[in-house]
Image (tube, rainbow, N blue to C red; front, side, top):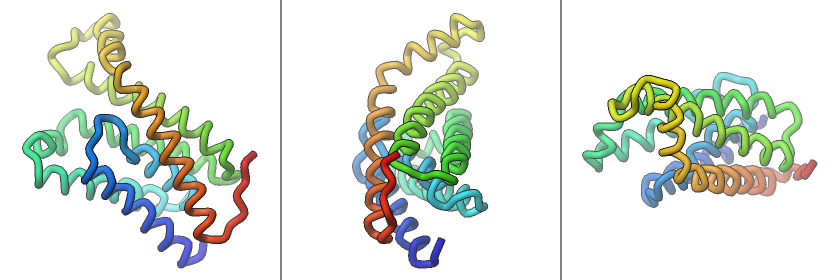
Length: 178
């Protein structure tokens, strides 16, 4: 990846994190897309983890400094599971980096949304007192997360596809559909 391409991708990802900071719609945000596409487009290099996770953390710190709700969230048990999910999503993106295409972005987006749902809700089950520590309690945590899954999936698909197309157009790369 050329230096100019790295700068372009970095600016796209930073802009999307800013979108999340200023337009906070529950579970409709570009965070999962930033993780997936950071891994996919930066490839199997350490920057593929550092930049996406770093930009996500920057957005959370800004929100934490401006909102009491987010300041409680920072570095809580929920935070740890959310970031573990994002790290796994970056890994998914890295696995797709060998053959990037709109088709792999869409497939990776579905996988990322499902993974985020499973990991973040299991973290809620594990650390929140409202769920009994039984299989039924775990299913209850997943059931409570279902209403949020739609926004997660739609935003993951929308933002990941947009990042892929914008990055390819802005770097004069040939867009691969399949």
